[in-house]
Image 1 (spheres, rainbow, N blue to C red):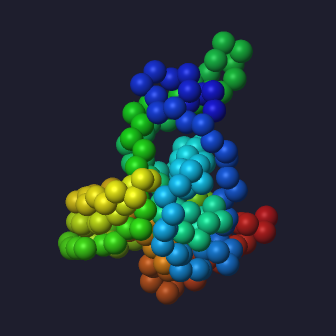
Image 2: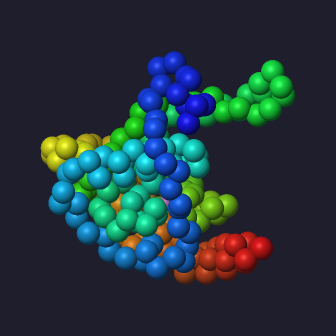
Length: 195
Ligand code: NI
């Protein structure tokens, strides 16, 4: 989209804004399948997912959220988004500091420590709640070409990796809460969704 492309040092984004499925869509409950074909279709899906994530905006997006039951997610925990007014007085968004990441077939090799972090989710819009996660993780994954990598992460990045990986196992963050909180927020969300 033009607002991103016009920016200097920008990650050039071309793609389609995909439909994001919201809770309780059945696809969000499925266990996603491993990616086995690293072809152009996969590259296009990744592009479209990044495009969709930045424009939502969100810091992470998993394939099941856009209707593809595959073990893959995209993420950017570093980008900034600033609201400005143009000469006509219309709102424009300025994006900077892109750091797009793609994780395919991720496997957690280590999880330790404990961290409470306020999470939200593009599939549960409007709901934010503290979730307890591991503070430090080591994850093996593949890139869009199928090459294997390992990442060691802590803090926001570690939280985001766990949140997105949950989507691949059919879990939304509401399910990581105490039964009482989960019930309360689920009702609140479904009521708001109905309008
Ligand atoms: Ni999510």
